[in-house]
Image 1 (cartoon, rainbow, N blue to C red):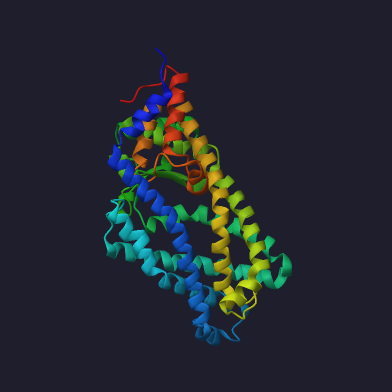
Image 2 (cartoon, one colour):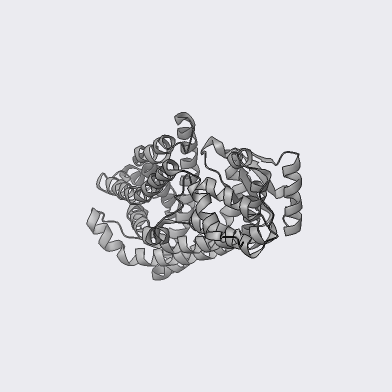
Length: 390
C-alpha cells in the first residue's frame, strides 16, 4: 500500500484541533490588519511632528553647528519622537496582544526596558545612516537615491556583521548548546556542512516570546545558528535536528547575502519614488521643508513606510523561496520528514497553516505550514528510507 502524502499532511494539521486552528487563524489574520493600522499610526506620528513643529527647538539649537551635526541631531530627534508617539500602539501590538494570545509571557517592565534600549540603539544607528543620506543629497544631487541605496546595502552588511556580537547579546543570553546527545548530534551536522562547531547556540528566546523558533544571523566570522530555548526544551532530538538542518540550509546557501542584495534593490526603488513624491507629500501634511533638509525627515519616513507596504509582497515571495530551499536542505541532509513536519506544526500556533492563496502571497514570509508539511510528506513518499520520527 503506497504512502498517501496528502492524507498524512491533513492528519498532521488536523491534529491541532479545531479550537487551536481557529485561534491561530484569528491571531494570524489579526496580525495582517496590524500592518495597515501600524502604517496609519506611523503616518499620524509624522503628521503630529510636522504640524506640531516639534523639531523647531532642536533645529534652532543646531543652527550654525554644521550640516552633519544638524542632520544627526534632527534625525535622532525624529526617531525618538516617532518612538514616543507610537508607544501606545507598540504596547498594544507588541505586548498586550501577544500576551492575550499566549504568545508571550514577558512582564511589561521588561518589555518597556528592552523597548527603551531598542529605541536608543535604533535611533543612534538610523541617525548615523541619515547623516550619510543627507551628505549624499548635498553631493550627488538628483542621483542621491542610487547612492543611498548603496549606502543602505553597506550599512545592512555592517550591521549583520556586528549585530550578533554587539547588539543581540544586549537583549538575550546566547550560550553554546549544553553537553549531551543533542550537542553531539548537532556538531556532527555542523561539521558535515562546514559550519564551525562554535557557531551553534541556544538563547533565551522565551524572554520575549513563547514561539517555537530558530534563526540564522550574522555574516562572515560572526554568522551563527541560534535556537530558542522554547524550541530546544519543547522539541524531541529529531525535531531539533530537523530544525537545525533547516537553519544550516540558510547558512550554507548564503541566504543572508541574497537578502542584502534584494534589500539594496528595494531601497533604490523606495528612495527613487520618495524623491519624486516628496514635494506632494510635504505640501499635503503642511511641511515646507525640502527633501535635502533634515527637517523633512518625518515626511521622508512617512513615504518610505507607505511605499514599503507595497514592497512587502515582493520581499515575502523571495523569503518564501529561501524558506522552501532551507526545508529541502533539511530533508536532503537530515532525512527526518516526520520530525520536520511535527516541528513545523508547532509554528502553526502563530502562523495559520491553511491560508488562502491571496493571503499567503500578500502576507506570508514563509510558505504555509500545510505546504511545508506536504513537501516533507512528499519527500517521505519518494524516499521510503526516510528515518521515522522517534
